[in-house]
Length: 117
Image (tube, rainbow, N blue to C red; front, side, top):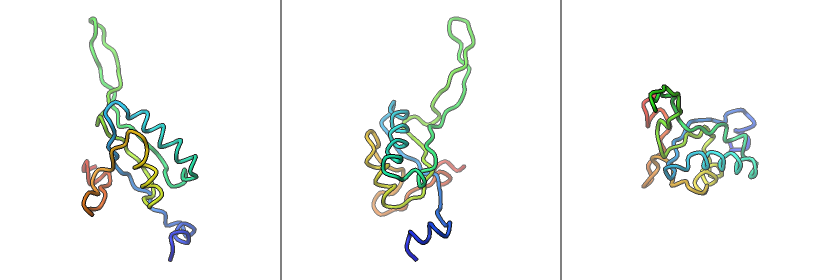
């Protein structure tokens, strides 16, 4: 069964992958992946791009302020159907250094395997 007929059968497998980026460029990488997936017609295979953040309370000048802080600086999470096209699209996005795992023939690490979630 080829990949086209698998997609028709509804067996597209979306999984979360962890992408390493240059620190401080997470927002730009997120925007670029979303734009590139639309441009290349792969938006159905790249479902969601997230920057893990948390709300924290900071005290500045004696005042409490809520701010958003990156939970894993330098990383972006991508929910996608991994294949050669989507891998190339993400890997060749400016400011992306690569996927977590996958070096030397090792399998790419999904979100649950990296962070134990």
